[in-house]
Image: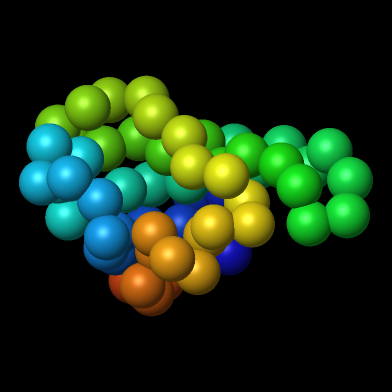
Amino acid sequence: MKVGDLVKLRNLSDEWGLVAIITNIKMAGSNTGTISLFTSALGDCSIPWHKSDVYISEVISESR
């Protein structure tokens, strides 16, 4: 996953929407950090890096 990728979300409230664009990835150390997302429903939001496999099911479209 990288900035600009379109991802499919899962295990989140319906208020988040079904897809998001990754807008930023901040790493703070070994397996810690934040993935910032933009969704049509919430706008800017974020998830913890170490839970990305829980909340992101797949990359729908990769950025270049």
